[in-house]
Length: 223
Image (cartoon, rainbow, N blue to C red; front, side, top):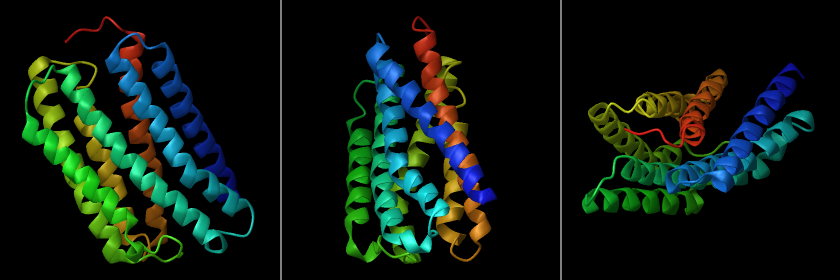
């Protein structure tokens, strides 16, 4: 019961923040950059809701294992929406720093996104099972992790070069999100308590959304 209460309160606050902030930026933002940040935040909240709402429903009713299929479908949807989340973040980088060309990099990001989504669709993932194969958990996250590394590197380069006070911590936030997420993928089936790392991972995403919110609140913020 304490776990159900804590997770439910945390998840409701997180999803509400992501969706409200995202919709506000998307509908009221005056620049394409802010609208992209809003779309990214809405996608984050909407995608995670497919996983988190079934999770706290399961915690309040018959338990996680008894609701494995519902949780697996939610995890599948979230895996896809998070891929698109980072693809949008890539285009935010291009627009923020007025990147021209770099077509090969764009192609790599699209290729990794498509590969990640295709891997998620493979039946070997066994999404409907409570204990899913570790091998495919690793395989589908390889292109995702490469996307994350690219985002970290390109934001670090351009934000430092431009002395960007809005996105200067974006590389750290993305690095933390992956740093907390990957151990869960690798070890949570062996050590369930490692699943608690999803809380700081979620807070890293909140940090990313807050950077977009800063753009919305300060629309004249220049590099």
